[in-house]
Image (cartoon, rainbow, N blue to C red; front, side, top):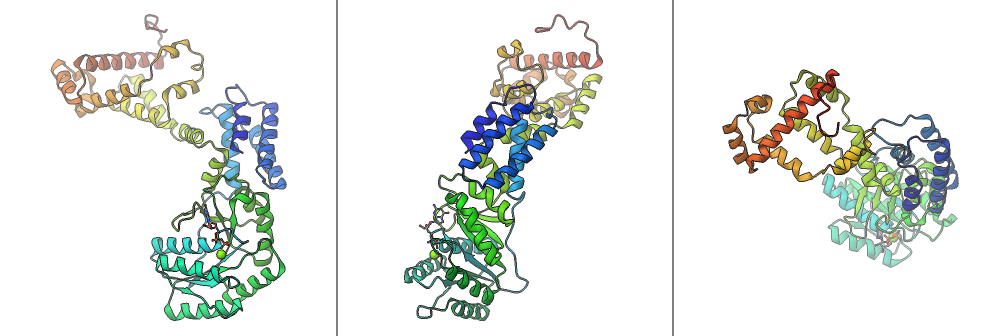
Length: 439
Ligand code: GDP
Ligand code: MG
């Protein structure tokens, strides 16, 4: 999936403006990619429609190029589709909070009962009771009891009773007696949704009146997961979804569709077989994962966030007044550093991308470290008033920063040159700049 989308979006990067044709061809690719990933057809259709509206209606932001802008829109819409922010479990006013786990066979229900208990114990010092509600295979009860042993958590089970609703009722009575604050009910699954299973789960629901009915879905199932989620939801009115096996090579289609089709949030994700492999679901992270563009997205966000217009204005004012000092200089360096690799950032500046001068500029990260070291060896007064920097002060700074005196001298000279030049530019006085290299 991500490979395709990346390819589709790559065609957009480096162009001056987003044209309608650009968007059409990109959305064609994105549509195919999503369908290939087994995302529900209607979900894809709505998604593409939104992207088209967003991309066409919007001006390209100053800090982004058209390709980045489209990536941002696709990412934002993906995130929105999966539900914006992380959702937590429903809590009961009186103990215990009851959680019922449902889902098809092999999706990870029993394992997830253990993972959830483990997480609640760790985060809330919870004292959960687990109820073994999968009574058809003795091995299922054994499995839950083993998990209980591992976590040192009580498991309520009955090996001779076959009425699951009765077992659950008895288990809840025990939880009341022992004042457990959580009860997590494991249930049976089938290979596909069938009437006897649904009827049984409904009976359990009526007895337990759970605060949470969590549908456990295997992330590898794609489009089928949407149908399963719809089936369980229409019968049981689930409260949320746990998407398991995300540590595998998943196509991401399930996550994308489930929320859109059921309106129910994904609350946790399973990231492995161990009892600690459970994490909250973060729609924004999932969107990045689906797009496979984590780094790119981070850079885009940074470019936006760190473009602090107010600060830029302040600096311009200082340049004009020629009061730009070393503190401002460090500020500037740090602002720019936050935004990412320098050479890449320079290319975002209009007119810079094709500037032949840029090819000869060496953006050596170490140089910035050295400059910072030199400045941090200055006193407060020296930073605010560079004119104070006489030879003996410079020698002290060189020793303090561990940089050679020639480097300290060069840095100060360049700083002053740059400051004077900037002052001239901001005052609109370009006289005398002809001698500067590159001008
Ligand atoms: P149930 O039939 O729904 O109760 O499923 P189980 O809890 O017995 O799990 C079925 C299999 O899936 C087991 O081998 C689990 O170890 C495995 N499993 C469950 N969750 C995850 C997960 O998040 N990642 C991986 N890799 N395996 C999982
Ligand atoms: Mg099970």
